[in-house]
Length: 117
Length: 114
Image (cartoon, rainbow over all chains, first blue to last red; front, side, top):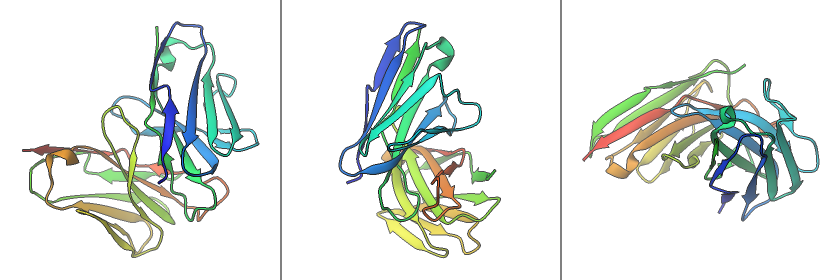
C-alpha cells in the first residue's frame, strides 16, 4: 500500500517552454501533497505544500508564478514549471500524506528528472 | 527553523557487517522517519516512529525514537550489497499538525563491499 506515482519520469524540454509533472496517490487519498527539489548529492528541498482544494503554500524563495501547483483531487497534484530555463533542471519529487493518517508520514513518488536545454 | 544533524555522512563497510547511523535535532520532534533513496529514485520509507522510546524493526533494520525526542538512530544488521544507497532521517515537530512539514537530514551514503 501507500504507492505514489509520478509522470513523466524524465523530460527534456527547450528553454522557454512549460512542463507539467503529475503526482498521483494510487491506493490512498491524500489531502496534503508536497513538492521537493533535489540537487545532485544533496538532501531534499521542500518547494511547496499542496492542499486539496486550496492554494499551495510555497517555501521562502520559491516563485509561485514560476512553479504552479494544482491539487484538484484527493489523488492528484500537478506541478507546472513555467517558462523553464536551464537552471530549473533538477530532480523533482512529490510526496503524499494519507488523509487521516497518524503522524506526519509522507510517501514519495519515484521522481521526475527535468532537463532544460 | 529546525535543523537535523545526520551522521556519518558516508560509510564504507564489508558485506555482513552491522551499520549504525543517527540523527539529532535542535528541537523536539514528535515523528521520526527513516528513508532509503537509490540513485535516480524517490525515497522509500523504511521505518516510522511516533513515540519517544519506541524501538521498531523492519527485517534487518531497527530504529529507535530517542527518549529526549531530539534524536533517532537506525541500525542495519548483516549488511548485504543491496543495502547500498543514501539513508535519510526526517522528522516533524507536529503530531498531525497544521502543515505536516518534514525536516530532512543531509543523508548517509552507504557503500557495501561484497
